[in-house]
Length: 333
Image (cartoon, rainbow, N blue to C red):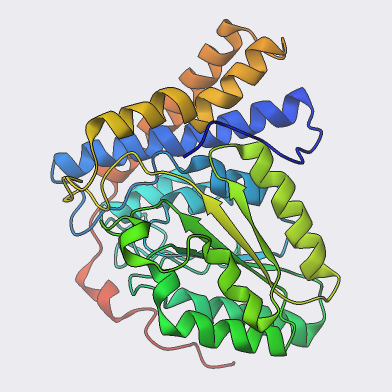
């Protein structure tokens, strides 16, 4: 990626900046802890970490309002935390325990929160895109001025169902923001080798869907673009596409050695483009916080994450009878 360049930044207060720093740090530390628990054998199956991409979801959530919905792929822990889901419940679900959001039956890729309007976590590549349009269709029908954030990656952008969804969303002017989290390697293939267009957001143009590219390593740039997209959707103008250029530091999943890129490339991104360090610099150079202030935030976050790991370890595994719950919708009384 090119050197950092932020356009159309919104004015933010010192407190807002601290909030973004804290929220991104929570995701980073949580994912690091999840990686440790996976290595210890306490998390089974697949585990897709969000390390490096924190500014994307934190910037987008900064533009959301109560009642807005979100749906995403299997790299979803960061989205859960950013929309306010309890770290204890998320970690317990990762470890398959009763205290998890899906009572230990869903794991990493199948967590939901009706309270926080989080509709998954989906393991099938691109499957969440038409579902996101369906959520937005309900809001259009109800005329409640809500917006749905539908996240998918650069790899999923080549799925046919994405373009069927673009067509319907444009026809019906659905209030949905299609967020392409372009980490440039999909599951393990560089974008240049898998995608014919350099700028993926332009694929919405044949359907009349406007969009833009955003620096996904800069939370303020993401927030500014998100506010523009949200305003477009809430005003009844239909869908919008944000292609957010980001970068994951780990492999596709915990089992991926990521040999398709060099260690030097990853290290360069960490040193020059890290989204958390960028906000840290803004806080310090703007005299919005001291080193001691930031150390206190870091300690607070580590305590939260450690407690979530302890909660997960102490929570019992689901009882056998739990397999038969939540299968059918409850009949009206």
